[in-house]
Length: 171
Image (cartoon, rainbow, N blue to C red; front, side, top):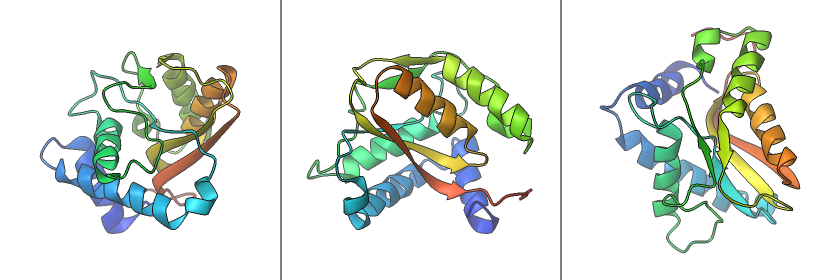
């Protein structure tokens, strides 16, 4: 759950340029989860991060986590998108989900704005995709990015997050 110390750790990584070591730990957590749940992800063709804008400050946190996961996946067991050939990118900054608070409609509007800035760099047709993000509050971003990928031919889109915000939680 995205509460207490876990909330602080994720936010420290996400919003500070000084805590980049957390990307390594989060990448290891993702690969560890994949190892522990191999049967649940059998048949996944591609694992990608929910992209952040190149202009995001202090850094592109999801890209950092996915790069660390790629390094951790030494036997190349998992179909992680190559970090030097991104499958999905975000062109521009948009309203951050954190700014919208916990209002579902505001989160959905921010998620739709996010999805409008996505750019596909590969062929999604027929693929089963696992979409990775740091947190899930309402599921709006997972929904809109998943819909974007489905619109471009993905057969299935699943989500994996480091933390789930409890309903009604306010840090």
